[in-house]
Picture 1: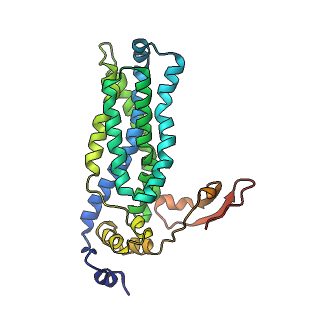
Picture 2: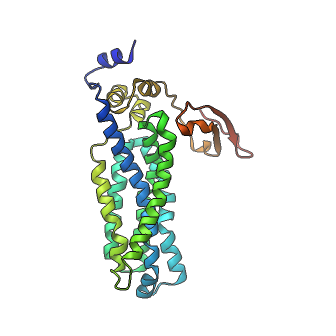
Length: 286
């Protein structure tokens, strides 16, 4: 049975297949909001650099305080990323994709009202927790929607977006902190404006069809796949995906795949995958 025939008889949830132009516009939007999350992560780490001296003088920070403030967002990412991965697998990519950015908008806006070192640390930690799911949910969402021929390059674009965000943030902080400086709370709070734009840009984005398929919601998955994925081959790839349920005990096990460099140029992927384990580990996928 063909994919088209199966889609027609699978139920009312399956929509008409949309035009290539619509799918291209959707993909551009998806890339923009996902790379925007990485850009925002780099931005919050870069923008604080030029104002640290002013913050230290005004709030009487010690060297330890400065180190904690500078690293608070990174600590938050270490917390938020694994929590986001768990929540994304359990509740879906779409709700977490909105919740994490909404939380970031709230935490970022609180920077305008900082009145103590403790509050500054707590707010920056919360911002890191909010941005952490971008790594565990944003990247999978990109790979789940992107055409196979573009996935590697788009993952590279998200990495570059982080560095770009850091440079933009540092430049903004430096320019606004020139001889007649703007208040440092406003400077670091500029991340709020970027996050508000990203929040509204994410409204209406669909759930991942691959996640829906893994949860047995196959009609919904087919409907979204036909509307947004760029080819019938992508839908077939989704339907043939093998879902393996992992356990916490499986974390020490690593799967190492050596991909042919030709895949980076858009050629068919040639890969050699093998199991690699930490010494002493005997865990296996179930």
